[in-house]
Length: 127
Image (tube, rainbow, N blue to C red; front, side, top):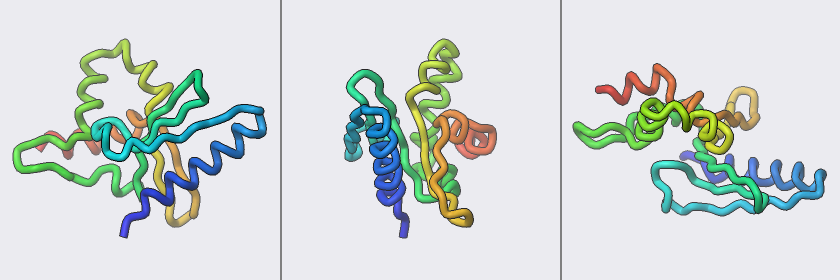
């Protein structure tokens, strides 16, 4: 059983504690599948935002979830960024992915592009 929601809950609690330390508010808004190609949650402090995709483990990042003769949805943002290099810096400041490192028992966040748009995943999508 996959526990992506547990990863989301852990990150939301962590960010809420950190924001409170700095006198900031953070709002976590579940996208409930409304933004299938970008992420699971929108986080905002009312002036900046981040979109976060949650996966149970790093193995789930590279799963081939596609219909016959169609590319995985997660490859679309990668292709768009490759076609428009000017968007890369903006993307990297607001689009993240997070998962659980099971052996070390901690949550691992990273810039979406760094973990999803890498050669290993892109090669899988090219089938």
